[in-house]
Image 1 (cartoon, rainbow, N blue to C red):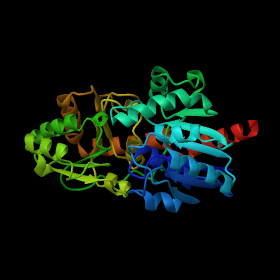
Image 2 (cartoon, one colour):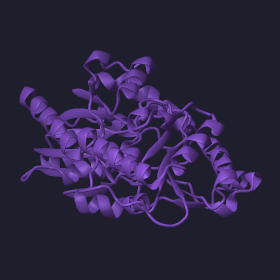
Image 3 (cartoon, one colour):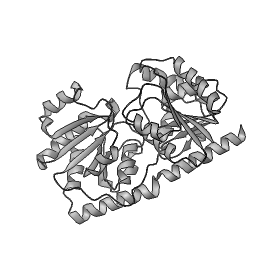
Image 4 (cartoon, helix red, strand yellow):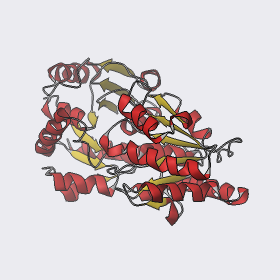
Amino acid sequence: MRVLHIVNDAETGGAQTLIEQLLLSREAGDEAHLLVLLSPGALSPRLEAAATSTTYAGMSRRDVLPVAAVRAVRTLVKRHRIDVVHSHLQQSDLVNALTPHGAVRVSTLHSSLDQASSRVAGIVWRIAAKLSSRFDAVVACSPSARDFAVEFGYRFPGEQIRIVHNGSVTAAEPAPEPSGDPLLLHLGRHAPSKDHPTLFAAFAGVLQRHPRARLVCAGHRVDPENTELTRELERLGIDHAVTLRGSVSDVRGLIRSAHAMVFSSNHEALPMAGIEALGEGLPVVTTDTGDARLLAVEPWAVVPMSDPASLADSVCRLLELGPGQRHELRRRSWELARDEFDIRGAARRYRELYEELTAES
């Protein structure tokens, strides 16, 4: 089986992480090539190491008409005799749908809302929705991602959209709780849907009860050069306790250093970073958006959206558990990853889908 994956960029993100895992999990004898629409990013070394080959189309984020990418897809399909072109995220879906490459077309929906990112993103979403009927299969990472596609006007039949939860590597055992002061982790790019203001306001509340707590945020444009974020931290008086790391490649290292993963999103499908956290036994506290609740092992770890006080209370409840209770929470989080989100299950389902579609073509 020869598969070409297409993704918008090589920055830290759920789609990129899933692609890496699928590349690494391919069967012996299979080829898994990668086309990145933009230029190299933070995850490029990992993606390049995992893929059979990696190509960068060099597009701009402002490009609506992906001429260079269409040309690259046609070249790669012909050169590698590709059986399946599998696109991730809407810009990549647009390229896949527009290119007359002759291979099977597969799309994975990774999110439930993204048009707030930019005007161009909104245009791309709408065009991709109209062209979705050109795909041989559309897969959603969660029920909410499928439901959003239907509500948004995807022309691919909603009842035929398959659901395959994203998967990640589950560690051999839960990582031990780190020593030292409480460290909270948030992974997510800078976008309105991630709702960093709610995260920061909630952390300000946590600091009132746990003044030695620290928050580490990582993701595309979540860095010290982002004045929108740094000004909010200064306004709240918590800049001394928050570190903005930007895009990182060693996500697992960050996860193992933390006491909890916190999500504050107001629109989300199923955060891949949360699945990675569970794989190391890191408990997740999340807002109740999309299917994010599936990542929590306790009802109190799921709180309303845009409610900093509730998010702070939930985090504090976790931090104030006894050592034995926290150990049990980590064990249950790890078991959830092992039973529901292991990459081997996701890779197997995608491989079965590829085989089904190529047999029909």
